[in-house]
Length: 389
Image (tube, rainbow, N blue to C red; front, side, top):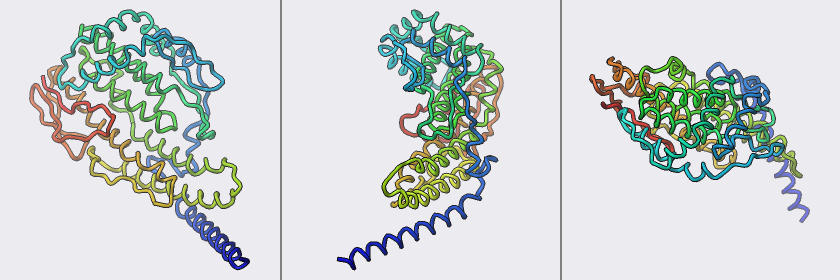
């Protein structure tokens, strides 16, 4: 029995020694490797996301959405959630279907909303106007960010923000159907909300911001002419830079979050997590560099991130990496689709060239069609890469 326990003890010591050596080697190999997009080293991630507090403009917005039937108040223990009615719950699915159906059309035609959606929008017109005008005029809507808190850091109410974005998009479409140019103001409010989310470290915030930007862009192709100047910001915004910064933040969380965990076998856990987190972070860094350097917009053939069988951190963090970039790169073609549609509607002939190295535009006086189909991850809206009058 003594020999058995002695053998186990030796095996544990050898295992710990091997993991310690592996951890030191990983840090020496990976830590000096710079991230793309001038983000510096992994240790520089916190510097990109300084602490900020919820500002008065955001706080005031939390008081304007409950009359619409939902809350945008962050779900924090210290914050009491306001009471809301059932109006939005009864209408949210018809609203969702309405703007999906209209935005997937390949021309600028817009059908009027269903009767129940129109009734909601008309009955809540004053409340929607107050929320929209506040976003347009109160300055940036900034929610609290405490990067170094990691998984315990507060988040905005992303569901509430998405509800507000869908509501404003549906009303913009209803207005555009009637030729009302103030539809652009509703879309502008969505963009201003999303623009602040792009400044946050969490990938989920980036994905919600991307969903909103895609919604605004697709809606813009159908709005009354002329297009406002602010639309140029959506076309020129550096989405990839913010995506890369978010992935660096996620990698930083992985390499630091485990250190907070108590445990009876803390030393052994630490050795495992040092190796596992360093390996996962390096894979994210190298693949982020690859994504930043690609000029193709079709990523359907890009090999998925393959986690090592022993590394449960990689199994949690890596599977959704490529689908997130797939959404972003398809958006590059969607931006061109809207730009081309607005050009044709204005009597201009758009160029056939594309920022996507794997595609071009077939253009006539009344149409612009992308040369290939670009896949969209599941549960993502398939906005058309074509315009036909």
